[in-house]
Length: 622
Ligand SMILES: Cc1cc2nc3c(=O)[nH]c(=O)nc-3n(C[C@H](O)[C@H](O)[C@H](O)COP(=O)(O)OP(=O)(O)OC[C@H]3O[C@@H](n4cnc5c(N)ncnc54)[C@H](O)[C@@H]3O)c2cc1C
Image: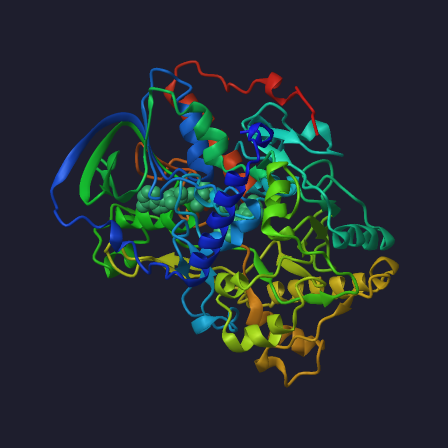
C-alpha cells in the first residue's frame, strides 16, 4: 500500500514502537528450532485434500510468482503450499531484516562444522538463514535487487540450457519489474510489473564518499542491472513506497481474490507422491497436527528453495542412489540432487573508522520518516551502495569477480553476533572495537566461487534438518580465498583517496584472536582472518542443477526432473552457474520463465504471453 494514505497518529507510532521493541528483544533472545518436528502430527491418519491442476510447494521468491502466473489461466486450479505463516508489520520494515534472523520466520539452519571458513563462529559452523514465511526468503532478505551479468546467463545457455541466454531471460526480468529508480538504463527495466524496485533516500555521507573515491580511481557510476555492470552504484532495492516488497506482497496480495488459487500456510510438505510409472501425482503434507494428501492432475512444482527442494526430492526417492540407500530411502531415480552446492562466500570483518559521526535519532522520528517513505528504516543495514570489480584473476572483458557491499555508519547492532553466530571472543576482538556511529564496513563477496559443497539427508525422517556442508574457501587452488584477498586489497587502495582521506577513513585494528600471531594487515593475517570471518551471502544455488545431461543435473532446461513425469523444480536450486549478483531477482525471473514453460507444455497453441506493453514506463513519480 502507499504509506502516504496512512494518517500518522500517536497511536500508530505507539503501536510500532512497542512492536519494534518487543520483536528486537525476542530476536536477540529466542531459541530457533533445530528440526521441523514441531510440524509432526501425532496421528498417521491421512485426510484427502482434493485434486488440483497444479500443486506448488513453497511460496517463496519463485513459488509466489508461479502461483500468480498459473492462475491467470482461469480454468486451472492451483494449490500453493507454504510451511511458514504470514509476514508482519515488523518484517515489512527493511531496517529490521537482520532481526528476522532471530525469529520464527527463519528456518534457522546451520552448516556442518567447517574446516576452511566459519572458524570464528559458534562450533565452527555458519548460520544459514532461510525464509519460513509467505514470500519465503524474499520476506527476510536484504532487499538488494541485483540481477547479475549478461555473461552469467550466456554461460547457463552454453552449458546446454537452451532458452536461458541473457537475451532470452531479460524479458522475464523486465516482465516482473515495476522500476521507480533514477538514472536507469531504461531499456533494461520494466515499468508495469508487480514487483517494485526503488532507490533509498537520503544517502548516508559514507555512500557519497564511496562513489567519489571510486570515481577518483577511474571507475564509473553505472546502472548495474543495465548496460554495463563494472563500476559502482547506489543500491536498487525491492521496496514499495519504502516498505519491503516481498514476492508475497508483490505477486500474491493483488490476486488473492482469484477463485482458482488456494494458499495453505503453516503446511509442511513431507513427500512428493510418485507412482510406479515414475509419475508425480501429488504431495503429502502436515498441517495443524494432521496429515493431508493433495493430488495434482497436471504437475507438481517444487519451489522450496536451494536447501529444501533437494531435501524433498531425496525424501521422495529422487537423489544420489548410494546416499538414498545409506538412509534407507527406496531409490526412484538416481540423480545428483544436493550435489554442487555453491554460494557467494563473503568476508564480514573489514571495518574502517572515520571522523564523520552519523547522527542517531529516536525510534519515533525514524518511524515518521518510514511512514513518509524515506530514512534509515527504509533500508536493510543502511547499505546504500555496491560496487563490481574485476581483479587480475578474471580476464573476461566487463565481467566482475568481486562485489563490495558498503555498510555505512549506524548499521552495526548487537544482532550481528547472533545473525553470524560469531563467538564471544571474536566478537569482542572485532565488533568490540567498532563505534557504530562513525564506522564503515565493506563486505567482500566472491562472485564466482569454485568451492563446491553438498546438501545431504541425516536420515529418512522428513522433519530432520538436512546437512548443509558448503565448504567455503576450500577449492584446491585457493581461487576463492585469493579472489577475496584481492578484494581486500582493492578496498584498502580505495581508502587511499582524497574522498576518504577527507573523512580520515582508516582501517580498524580488529584482529580475531587466532590471527594475532601474524603482522596486522599482512597477507598471512588476511588469509587467517578470512577463514575466521567468512560466511555466506545467503545465496545457495545449484543443488537441483539444470542441465540437459542427467549425469550432470537434476532438471532439464524446461525444469522437468529428469526421468520423472509431471514434476518440475523452479527456484534458485536450478541455477547452473553462479550469478555476478544476488539471487532474489534471478529467483523471480526463474518463476516467470517456469510459468511460461508450464503454459507452453500444458496449453495447446500457447505462445509466450510476454506483452511488450508491460515493459514500457507508465509512470515515474519519484
Ligand atoms: C538474510 C538474507 C539476506 C539476503 N539478501 C538478499 C538480497 O539483498 N538480495 C538478493 O537478491 N538476495 C538476497 N538473499 C537471497 C534471496 O533472497 C534468495 O536467494 C531467494 O529468496 C531464494 O528464492 P527461492 O524461491 O529459491 O527460495 P525461498 O524464497 O527460500 O522459498 C522457499 C519457500 O519454500 C518453503 N518451504 C521449504 N520447504 C517446505 C516444505 N517442505 N513444505 C512447504 N514449504 C516449504 C519455505 O518456507 C520458503 O517460503 C538473502 C537471503 C538471506 C537469507
